[in-house]
Image 1 (cartoon, rainbow, N blue to C red):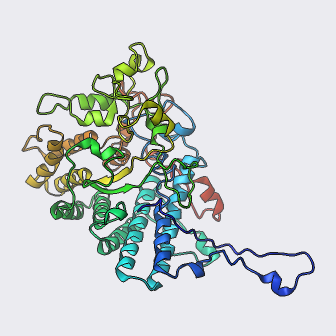
Image 2 (cartoon, rainbow, N blue to C red; image 1 turned 90 degrees about the horizontal axis):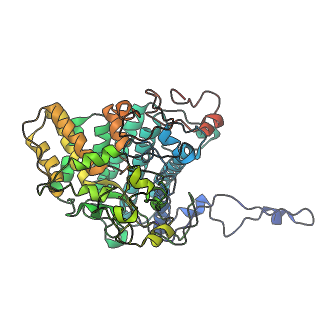
Length: 519
């Protein structure tokens, strides 16, 4: 969805002008003729379009994907944060339940759900082009399903809200069983799948499609270990021929190749130089990423916010392609002490950081994905840190292929189709095919390894570790290649999920919303 397009915003408040004396009764009952109420808004196809933009528009907020302020980016074992407080809270498993990094993702996703609920209740009655109506409703179902997917996997014990509140009691929903949330996610994504088009024209690139709904339906099954159902959905995407791998792996992480053939769904960010700050929604303005602020390599003599752990670099160094060279995905993913790692202004890591610089001495590594290092000068990257225009890719075809291979393996063992899927990803990277005749366990390990090489630093790693049951092992911070040691302690049975925002607990009648275990 081109969220930078001009949109209307629903105004539900009624402006009543009060006069102290000398006013007739009818003057006391005036309303603002320019205010737009719910009753006056949902009338036309244009209203429906603008309402749909409102559902999409929470995604680029800097506490969601615009600024990577959720556990999808910060709590991970492939990178760390040297700051023990504020921006580092989640990475240290120490975020207070009242902290903005907990509260904002919860609020924004439920805001999107509320808007989707209202959209679904209003748009069916609008007289408009029926095809457009069907597609828009499909998008609303997809977005609601996706927002619940995120909330469930981050907070786990969450309320299920599928209708617009009608009474005071409706504003105090109880937490639903996770199984009920999964059921709703599946229902929404199936509904979206039946209503969405295969693709959009150039003017509408980025809007949800059949492929996005199918991909997330398969992913939802995979996360529930419904292996056969997951494989069936992924096979639809593989067999349909709509999606493919782009020849150059790095084309998935720049501002030049947005919404390419490998992308099933991504957050649209346009680098608007008028972007005024964090977390708001601004009429007629696009939204920018702040990836540069959090992820970019620091100036010489200083340490960045998110250095990459050495074990990830070592994993890439051990992956040798068919020409005897380092897996080229390494150079699109990580910046480390290597002459072919290009940072700013065409300079290599070694040219940019002198041999006695803190980053060379301490072996610091940094994120390469998501930042247009080669496309901009150093000054431009730093000056546009709030104006980043690299879209955040939420789901791409390479991930689908690897999830398909995993689902097939868990369901039927490593079949020929499972080998074909994982090797298709490896062949794009020009690395040797996976050795045939592996056991089911060995093939599972091969998939885990491939997901590191292909998908690191894309906000997926934490959830992979969670669903595999590998979180506790991954966050043993006494590991020599993990630098995240400044007081970080992972507690099994607690830190798999974030705490429920304290404000939600306080705002509900006592005991209606319970805190997650361990907090």
